[in-house]
Length: 76
Image (cartoon, rainbow, N blue to C red; front, side):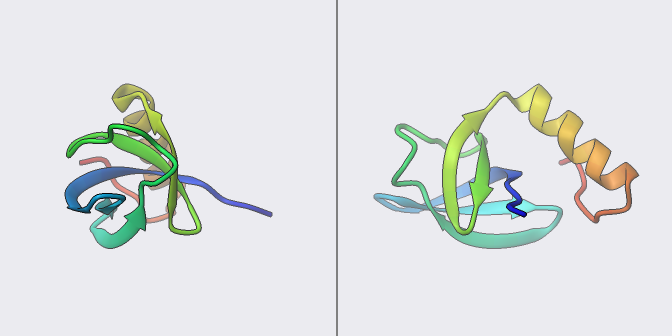
């Protein structure tokens, strides 16, 4: 099973890298597959790569469902 999670970009760390926040956990990821990401954008992350940009409302609803299910993710 593969799992891709919505995460918010909190810092651009290089030409094709960014730091994300997911429920208080921060991790550096590759943004090479998604053009024009910016701080504050939500992206779908899988194995360290941003796959696509995500609508902020949809991302927050998804993160709220994770939190409700006790999966540790919280809304910003």
